[in-house]
Length: 506
Image (tube, rainbow, N blue to C red; front, side, top):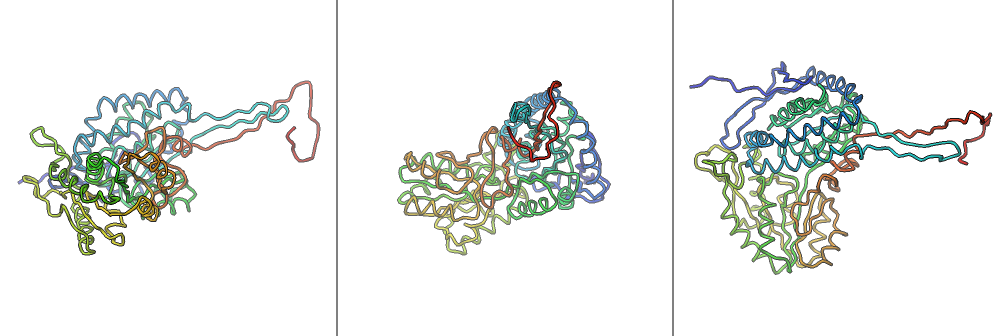
């Protein structure tokens, strides 16, 4: 029997792998087998301080780089990522459990933000007003914040950090990334890639850890901003704590995304997209569709079509078996799997009908894996916690409504306002929906309306804390601060003389 200790995943500080001496670790599982494949270091205060100090040194160097030199580094990172993204996808699959093709899709969506960042010179330009007053010019500069913190979730270990760090780095900041301790290796791979691209040491730092590391970033006087994606309670904590400490914050929280289906919709299209959006990535995404609002009389037919498609889904090891990739993999941990199951228990106890039950799923050869089957629930009461709370798993609920207005009102009455979708062939209904729904991201016959990189990502209500959304113009505004300069160069032949009055524009 092997007595080999699992490898320890460490920090990335000063442009190099930095083993931890804290003595604290957490297990990193292979979700498909349930086996512990590594331990990740959990930083102590000395390591938190070292990471932030390294970033501050890196910032002092990086902020002196010309725009042209910064752009060269970002282009090099983009090319390296494009050439080697399969490596990163396999790392994600090994620790998160999602299938490799899904991991590749995650990377490509993150790469869109890298590509946006290559054009950053246009997005950090100031403005100039000549002769705003006689002989006086007024202009503005956009400058970096300094050291910025990113706290990312387990469900997208590459894409979510890439929503933030390409923009932050392009704008001249240094980044300290605190990845999820459940799948920490993608962050280290990205750090190594930045080094190969020519980024100065310290400008991209990876701090492994738990709440101690999070609080270290929130309370550090050096860290100027915090970017976060995760559950609403933690997003609110991040926002309140960081704001109290004088930091800028963009904290993206949870969701309960609804799909409103009108009777004129193509139900085969709806069924396909409901399955894709409800069960893709095992439902572990904040933009997943978790509730279908079926405007009668379509519910029975739609449920039948979705059930047929569920029966054909292949669930297994995300890495594939004998070259064959399943449709989706396991959940991230056994604890999370059991939490998802508890919501199905709640729905059942509240009187809902479990049409397809994913509880207790076992996969041959992977009996100890963290698998949970696609679950379809009908007639769920809107008072049930299984309806009101974010489940973050492959559970799709159907609520039957009688009118468009009833469906719209249900969406608007919810706590969250992240994403939503309407499926219809009625342009007037779609236009009214997009105008009246109180949600930040809307799909019209599109189930997961994640905006492209040159727009911005973020919800409303309890799905976003702070004023700035992720990436796009919002991102560049968030990671820079503006100086306004009023300048006068006197003509050598004239002199203004003394005037103690209030300055006037003339």
